[in-house]
Amino acid sequence: MRMDKLLLIDDEADVQYSFRRIFDSPDIALTTASSGEEGLRLLPKLKPDLVITDVRMGGMNGLETLRRLRQFDARVPVIMMTAYGTTATAIEAMKLGAYDYILKPFDVPKLKQLVGDALNAARAMRQVVSYQPLLESEDYDLGIIGRSDGMQSVFKLIGQLATSDATALITGESGTGKELVARAIYSHSARAGKPFLAVNCAALPEHLLESELFGHEKGAFTGAHTQRIGRFEQCHGGTLFLDEIGDMTIATQAKVLRVLQSGNFERVGGNQPVHADVRIIAATNKALESAVARREFREDLFYRLNVVRIQMPPLRERRGDVPLLVDYFLKKHSQRAKHPAKKLVPDVLRALEQHPWPGNVRELENVIQRALVMAKGDTLTLADLPAELTQPGRGAAPASATPRGETATGPAAPTDIASMAQTLFTWARANSQLKILPAVERELISEALRQTRGNQVQAAKLLGITRATLRKRVEKFGIRQELSIQ
Image 1 (tube, rainbow, N blue to C red):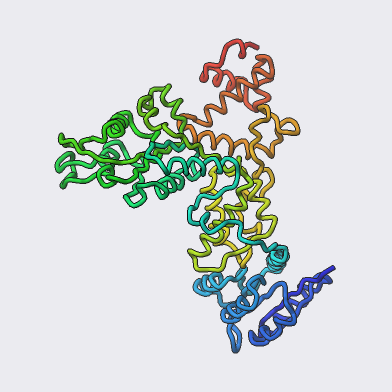
Image 2 (image 1 turned 135 degrees about the horizontal axis):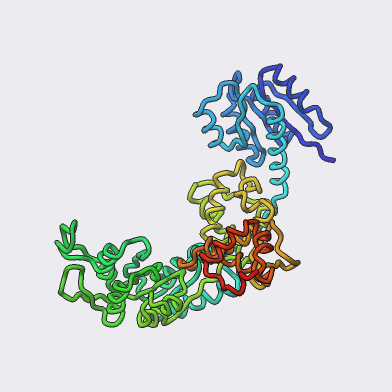
């Protein structure tokens, strides 16, 4: 069995003695050095799995020692310790890549735990499998990553749309990359040399959105001290991306429809027609067909927008693209931070592939960014990921093809509740009308009554509530009386 090699750098003899007693174990080989210079001389031959160094020592101080250690091998975790802890020292140590920072006198159980965690991280880093870049340079330029069938269909539609001036409607859940697709259509089109402007229709109240899109005349409303040119005019000859168009009010929809039909509009507060030659690309995470049926979205505008539909697949339906996306985000954010690209251990990639990603590609990118910040070496480990990706029951994908109330292996277990919740919130993001708690509460009560054939006593027991509470809920939700008869 391989022994873990621990190097202690500290100029105090009593600290060295304490470490020999604390880590007197057949699994750990402890080597001590009395200065940073001596510790650095030992590195090439010793090749330690973990280094623990004091901050204040004679000769080379701990921070400079840490800097040199990182230059020798960035994969070796380094724990800093000192009896003179300051905020500035702690921040500088972590900036230089220290695994952690502890104060003297240290708590022995906590020290042992920290050393154990650091050694586990060191073992994980040794498991890293090197690989060739997964993507071609042009894939990085586009920013739209994927080799799945769903994404290949998206790429084909982008190519077809690029050769025409047709209006496009991009649909899909939040975080799937709808704006990236809109920019790709624009950049490959004949309008690429003209402006591309994006407007989030959900981010502005109605009167501000109209002013943003169509501009306004001086004195049109309080605060309109000068004439303002809107996005349609600014975008003349180019492409206007209307994101979250499903959140646009009926009144504004009518004005957008007129632009699509004739290219003409008036600024807010004006009566002179303005003409603009603009290509519209719209996007939404809502089901516009349902909104049309509810008369919340104009049917004529829907058909004007829905000339070519691009449906963005959610990330959970293209898990094979996760390694490609991870590779892309690692390089992208490492380049931004001007650091060498970090690697990751196989367990990290497995955890990322198994997560259902309710927030889709945007959520994955945020996780990678967080992991790069939290990483204590040049390798990402499970410890650098958020808890929801590593805790049991949090990473299972929703089984959409499985009957309600069951998993692929039988009735849903309590550990699946987190996955069910993630699925519910995914639906809620796609449908702003869905109120999760009332909907779930009503369904649970109805199902309990069905399971017990309307026996309220048994149904209340299943739900963990009193019969009186159950009666109130039945009345509140108007659940069919035949279900509530005892």
